Length: 158
Image (tube, rainbow, N blue to C red; front, top):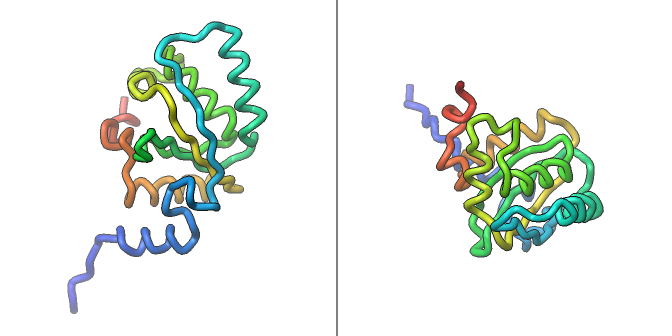
């Protein structure tokens, strides 16, 4: 019996491309994009309030997957959310202040180091199961900078 290959990167990549999840780019019309700025220092309360309002006007309050790209279009972060606007807003806040849900401080450390002009892309996906599957497949074939620095097996352990 021939030995089977366990490397699934090629078929996963093909699936993601055929369903227009790849490339993760502003040129891929299946992704909606928005240019944002993460501050290098803590903004005023009024600026935070204005940013929250602006994000909620631009980004849907629906479930989906999203990506952060830097100015060189490198994949910084890839994630899933039950509410895209709330998740993107939470990454903005953690860029200048450690939040209570960030027990290890890794999100604050990462997003505070990646401030300035960023691009966020998103796609709506109906179910959490779909979001989990696509997130895992994308990270398998196109690992984000965040996942390289903080692999899931380490950041999810206590």
